[in-house]
Amino acid sequence: MALLSIVTILPFILMIVASFTDEKDLILNGYRFFISNISFDAYIYLINQYEIIVRAYGVSILVTVVGTVASLVLTTMLAYPMSRRDFKYKNTLAFVVFFTMLFSGGIVPSYMLWSRVFGITDSYLALILPNLLMPAFHVLLVRNYYQTSIPHDLIESGQIDGASEFKIFFRIMFPLSIPVVATIGLFTALAYWNDWINALYYISSPKYFGIQNLLIRLMNNIQFLRSSEGSALIGAGSVELPSTAIRMAMGVAGLLPILILFPFTQKYLIKGVLSVR
Amino acid sequence: MFKKIRLQSRSKATFSLFLLAVPGLIYLLINNYLPMFGVFIAFKDIDYVKGLFGSDWSGFKNFEFLFRTNDAWIMTRNTILYNLAFIFIGTIVAIIIAIFLYELKNKLATKLFQSSILFPNLVSMVIVSYLVYAFLASDSGLINLSILRSLGIEEINWYAESKYWPYILTVTYLWKTAGYTSIVYFAFIAGIDKSYYEAAKIDGAGKLRQIFSVTLPLLKPAVILMVLLAVGRIFNSDFGLFYQVPLNSGALYSTTQTIDTYVYRALMQMNDIGMSAAAGFYQSVVGLVLVLIANKLVKRADPDNALF
Image (cartoon, rainbow over all chains, first blue to last red; front, side, top):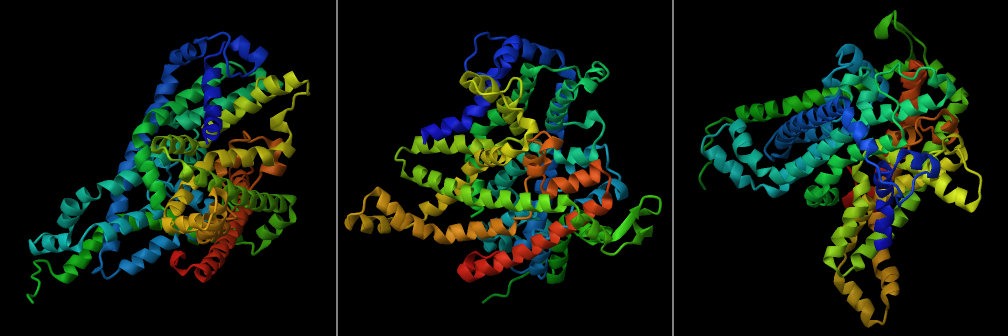
């Protein structure tokens, strides 16, 4: 078991070690687990390029925060009526939500709709709206939570006190949803942070790149420059030629937020996985 | 008994509740239901000048073109075979890990190991592509330089040889998802009544025998459920795994092209809306049929666990 854990972590260690390795060493000896010459060059280079990186982080953070908050609001607002036994349309809603998990129109109509009809290409909306904003699965999870964990008496007492349905939701249900909201909030935030596919479809201007898409561009850039046709165009782009250690350092930079937040969120993540059951 | 006094009438309450649901419903309409109507695109010969609605109908022409190409066969074969491998090997590995975890006495160790095997699931496929690159880069990767070179074997240009990628992608996929799946199976195992194990122990069964006679048989319903659900999704694939990890290398298409990557490339790179829409429609319809069949089978095996 311990062996397995080590094997699982191995690739990360490799990447981290490589980012601290002297560039010449990397080219001569390739990646290794033990460094002979520690060098911070890669990170110094990155710090000098801070504008691009900070911008990418900023975009990722903005999209993650806005997307997650919007998602939580939308999800809970839809799940709550579905959870009420006395709501006339609860079964219709359940079907409407569930059916989207069975059949999808496909990428082409989606793409046409978002880019042509709503015109969100090259905007922050393109990073937030398509697909990730309200997963049907989360709606069902929250509904089940409301059905099983929140006693109907609370709602009744609210009704007796004369509160409107809106008040009941925002004053009573919302504060009580913290556990389930924490879980799906985590999953949603993770999904937004890791998303690069929306940008692949809808973004062409680098200023909207999050950290993931920046990493993709960097990886491609090197591929591009390796071929002989590409080398004639060195210096034409705004992103300079990153070397291997720098690329690994960027990878570490992309990994860092998850690495740091993981110990704190682990409990909720595992609970979330189990709640699938 | 007292009649409940409502200060808000029933119909007003229903209306208010419905209003709460409206934003979410609007989103579902835009994001999920409107595109469903867009399946007609696959049956048209789209001309941007004439627009989506003005373009001529082409019947099944797009589908004819699609299935005449070699691509259709390759992408379908790849998608299905990879998924079968993932389901089969993935389930076995996940169960083994789950059993090991269950047998651990040390709570701290269990938590630690669960964290470390779950961690790969949290990083994006882009990071994974970087990690794979650290191993497979042709001039500086770990495998070529440190392993092959020291063994005297000639270096391999990994990103140009398609034959290795089924193994590479399967290992990568397992590395990323086994932890997550094993936690799900762990929960199932933890739900097994301990008295079964005690009864087996009284009958003289050792640890290994207990696993084969108690744990595995009692896991069967869970495995059937998970496998059937996965089979329902056999026409889908992880886009990041098949597009980004191979670094979008054309030389590898024969073993890395799946239906999802084909739809993307046909739409965004080849600008062939007809083929892309046809492939997407093909995937959605077959996917729906498979999920319905899978659900029927699950209902027969274990009615409580069916999706609907």
